[in-house]
Length: 565
Image (cartoon, rainbow, N blue to C red; front, side, top):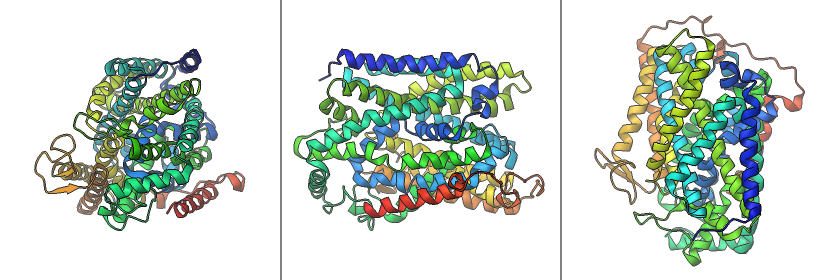
């Protein structure tokens, strides 16, 4: 049954859309060059880029996907933050941002060109562009699910309307428009979802009442009572927890490969830090973002845990056509059941904001990589800046159109986070191995990097093609060549896909680099390899130095892991 929005709900929605489009129109007059459209002229202070850094990742796929994962996997989903995000965010702030910002590269693929060669850059540009449209499609699918559940809209209509709004404000103001909208969206998401958590907890008897019901859910599923409510205690064996993964798969697959692969190499988030107004501000950007990031499990995962607690006694989740529980409806269903008018409008605005944030992040990353790393490099080099600005706007339209098709692929999964991590396993996992060797081993060659990336992607494809998660049939979820192994869950399959992709890329890059001649001198690699790069000297107070901020966020993360062990 759909819901009826009151006048106050519509007012909140229309005011939000007015602000979004107004920011785009206001910035259009100052967006007259490619540097301003794609990198915001490198003029934005660190507190804004820090909020944009986290907000670009706080898309609908995160809000709805983590809510779905909280229901499907329980408190173990917190590992996507306390193991799978914060350490990598500290690493990029301390070690990797000086390379990105100092090289004056406009994109991650362009850094690969400077460090390795043109073919490595081209391969990554193509794979990254593909990944961004799939991620954008996941956001569109999430929005379609939201509008279908709450308002009864047709799925296709919901996708098309949302695409038009994002197209409008990105096409007008470029990255600057996206960043300032992301700051607005960050606060909307926080204030829009917080009431859902408090009201939902009140309905299930508070934290202790939720944990009691989750213990019952764990026992019914054949696990120990704490499997849904604890993060580390049940990682000794893959069969002991709902995620179906053991500690090595979690730490290596998520905590190292997928985490560092996403936060350290994904241009979607790196682009926000590169828009900062100084090297020091760029390095502080991911560290500032890490502070609110570590507390987001209480905002996006807990609603899913509440939903699972409700499901134990009432059958909360609807079924998908294949008979599986539709966890992706977690947050929309919670909003429909618990938020009164006014708060409902605020909650819907928050979800719309999360959609806009994730969609805009992927689209701005896509149009930059397409324009600079594919179009300018291979199709139309040496054109005036105005021509590339025009192409950036055209590629925005094309990226959104392709994303609409990707939204229909996402409908095959009952948890969009499962699909998203699969995409990251194919693209980011091998890329992180390339970056790790390129930045810390000067002997790595262009041939080694290129064939390493190919080997890593091939390893991911092969592993996916011969494995399946429990309950799945051969197709989008794997097993289309043979069935050599069946994993307990899609997420476990994703973690091991990432591990194989990383290992293959790492080993092949080393072997080919040793067998081929190094073409770049130490002088050529200054600013690109850690050992050959002068350390930045930043005249900033001790409390604002990146190393100090990194220690603070890492200590706080360790404390959270201990509390919820």
